[in-house]
Image 1 (cartoon, rainbow, N blue to C red):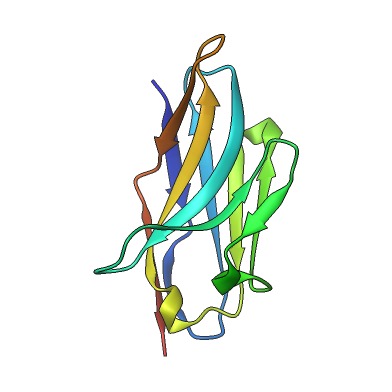
Image 2 (cartoon, rainbow, N blue to C red):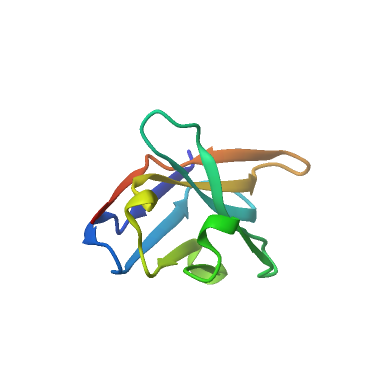
Length: 120
């Protein structure tokens, strides 16, 4: 069984920082891309940032220059450093990972979500 466990959310004032972590565990051969998505009340889930196994990263325009995604392949963990937070960053943040669970079998898994609330 595969699990993605997130941590690091919370309440912060505008301009503050938070660091999210997401660790993958269970039965899989390797991890391909890992990413962070978010969903605000009444809105669709949107991509925040994604990083490949080789370390290439892409960010949404709304977070460029403020958020940084990184990963530690030895720990099967992806991080999201969030700086200069704004009230509009308030959302539930979800970790996503594409895992190789068979010879040619890749599957997407999601974490349970962690709440990030930015007060003005």
